[in-house]
Image 1 (spheres, rainbow, N blue to C red):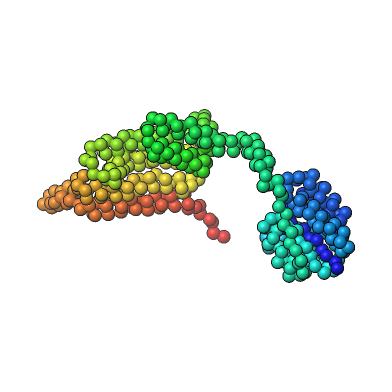
Image 2 (cartoon, rainbow, N blue to C red):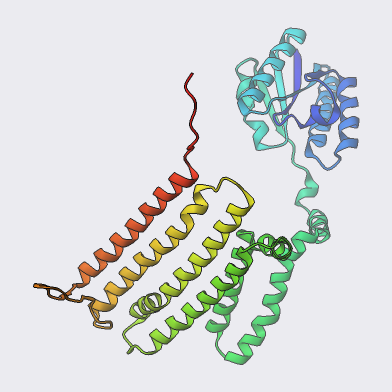
Length: 379
């Protein structure tokens, strides 16, 4: 009875690391492959898989069976390509050795998915899955922790927050005498840190000093307009806080609407100043200004109008702001009486104004930034 002991490597790591072309068949060839691959990557479980294939082959030969050990491996980038490559190698081994059955040796769930490919071509008597015993011992945990502590980035990402939590939590618990407040504070800090790392805020902040220095040295207008924008935003926050403080206690929602109503004009002016400075820098640096830079100032004003309209609508319905009235006009014998807008009309006017400003911005950006006004001579 001729048995083919087949080691499956779907990932293709073995031939890439050892520099061989699969399939590899024969005792001496596989034994040499174990040494070459083991020296290259001794921590890979595929080394144990190759050794297990040799052990099974030796046991079959000791039992007076004709056994051939071989290794098949996928060498394509895609999953389908790797499986087809393995199928071709199995067909080649079957044609070369004409085995009656096969014993498959695998070391992962990924390699186990190749088993039906072999079963469709040859009878499979057994599937031997190799599990490294050391991976389930405490020793492996020790080495994993040792590698983890040697990684500077992982230490800063994991150990520093844990250390801060262990230091701050007892202090908060002692000062507040409230377990819920201490847990909520620590959870909020952890959430802020996760957002800080997840959104790559640290990378953006690390580049700010260099960008500011480059902007100062190059004489950009935007560095001044950014400072103006930051000041206007601070004024807006202060105006919003004053507006909220003057209101009676009517709930969180109305307080948020009041804050937005009083602060949004200043914030919109800040956005307008920042976008205008960026537009001026772009126009100085380049002959062709992109549509996004041209549309930024109009977008800032449009968003400000829409937000002002919605917040004013809610505040007027709650009788916290006065309605908008359009004053009367007297022209000779013609007299137009003043008109008081309802909350719905006020909202519609601001929304339409925002949409109109946005459309004007799109038109201006398309005309100056997206159109080619050059005239092509006729042939």
